Length: 465
Image (cartoon, rainbow, N blue to C red):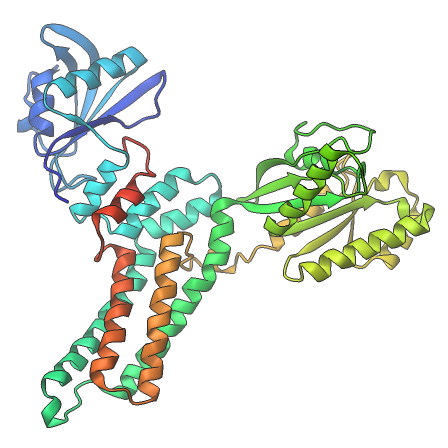
């Protein structure tokens, strides 16, 4: 895939604003822009130094379209590794389109989604995992996902994989060399050192694979299902967490008949709260569908918040018993999911009954969603459930499903190499497994790729990036 033409696109979001930036990239970017730009100083763009800014006008024949600032980046010292021109114009929709249409008529082509970053990859300015991190950085909507994307874009993940690949490649070369001298029965690759390397690679791969569980929820938000019987205050709690009237609140049981979802950032991490239909026996067809969806959301959630009314324990022993059975049922069905048991409406209960609550149900959280009492303690607990150690220590965290899949395949091949070394497998068979592991390493950084893969990755980018 060799791209030689010059592309143009709007690099800022579409719509009216104070300014807009139109980006050109390609061998002829400067010469095309120069013909349509008249500098205030009268200087030609092609004669100017790279990384300079010039004031002037974009002109279509004799018509001035706008007064602009032109930023000049000459190859190879640009984002794409090609000549790049960025035109900062006024943010009128009309002006943007007039300038873009002008350059399309003068020899440019409209850029495809992610094509500027694709060219940066093809020209060696970024490896593939760094290029994918650009999209993650643009999509980041909280501090944690931003930190992970920045760490990956700086090459943290790539450098770990590249280092392992180089060391494995060195040993692979020695084993391949042994095959050329098979009749002499010589051993160039020290098997003890090779076993130590495979053990270390095994450890690193397992750590990266395990990090995906954390990285995936950080990137996509931690889903939290709020469940319980009807009219216990689930919607009120959702509104209190979001600090807005997101869900309809009513004294009528069964008001929420479908799931309601919204996101909020707590301590730099995204949480997706899901208010579900109340769980109860009902003959209402619509409500039954909502209750079915409730159990589907529990399956999908990372954390479950079980809500009940605080005064139930003291006023209704049968209902209290049923609540405790329901809590045990959820714990047994989803043993790996953190379950937070929350007594709501504590503002209606006296101190004696609050003490009774604490003795009858273990690890209970007391709150009043209506007044906000205890809501902050609940959000702090949710935050503590996330394994943030790796993030705090600035370790590499995998968030990309493609990388995760390649790591799993690499791990599988390394396991085969490890077993081969332990059973004294012949060098030619060892070499096959090593080559496969190297192949999957190369898939991550883009040393091994194809046009279909690149098309799938960059199709998810916005146009202009």
